[in-house]
Image (cartoon, rainbow, N blue to C red):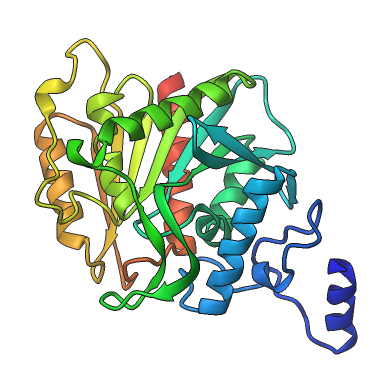
Amino acid sequence: MVYRKIIFLIILGIRPPIEGIYFLGSISKFSYYLYIVTPHIITMDLQLASNLKRDQVQCVNSEIPISTPWGTLYTLHLLSTRYGFLHVPKCVSEGSNLVLIYHGSRDIAFHYLKCCDTLISALSERGYIIFFGQASGTIFEEPITHPKYQDIYYGDLYWGIRKSQNMEAEFEYTREAISSVRSSYNINHIFFIGHSNGGVFSLLLPIYMPEIFTAIVSHQGGLGYDAGFYIDFEAIPSSLPKPSILFYTSNVDVHHEACIGGYNLFKNMDFECELVVANEEPHGIISKESQDYMCDYIFKKVIQSTN
């Protein structure tokens, strides 16, 4: 059915975009046009968002692996009710590297699978395994436009960044995801990329899980704007190494000041930090340039760690 639709488009003289994620392998019931979209952009289309939500739910319920241009996507069930999605490249080296990617608030993992095609391609070419985390909470029957922020609102889905938000459960979820991957693959280095709310959560990892990660990327996250967010630097065991941190923001990002504040704070605490302020990348935009930069940063850290 999927291939017939592609052929039909070609007969009509409509050339499908060469960019995007094309899951044409294992689950033909998933909508074709869902993945033939402009990549790198957090969509504002409610119909597309509805299809993304439906396909994520179907993927979780069916547990059927999905073929991608770069490998295979699996549903990974964690704890009692949590899950995420594991992308395994076509060629996994003897000692591979793992990258965890956590989305922003009110969002779903499949949204980032769509947006991060440049990143998935570059990491997969080098044999990296990628885990797309899903925040806990309630996913709506149908996505809506957020009344205040005017972006797509998939549900009350947040990464806990305070003890009162069950922060410890997020660490447990993250540890179990890593443990599950390590039980099947020989992992050398582990990296973390968090966007927005996921990027704020990422700054807790150098405190409570410093020995796990080689480097961390806070993409349009930083310190955020939650008055209850607190970083307890005294909780870091002095004997453990500190992961490197990349803060990526832009001059028009609503988290611009939060990222600069996070960079200054961690740099003053003797963390190896890097700050990138891109030009004209609004909050929620995961540009090709940002994905290229994050991949290069990760590749650079792997080389540095082996020297």
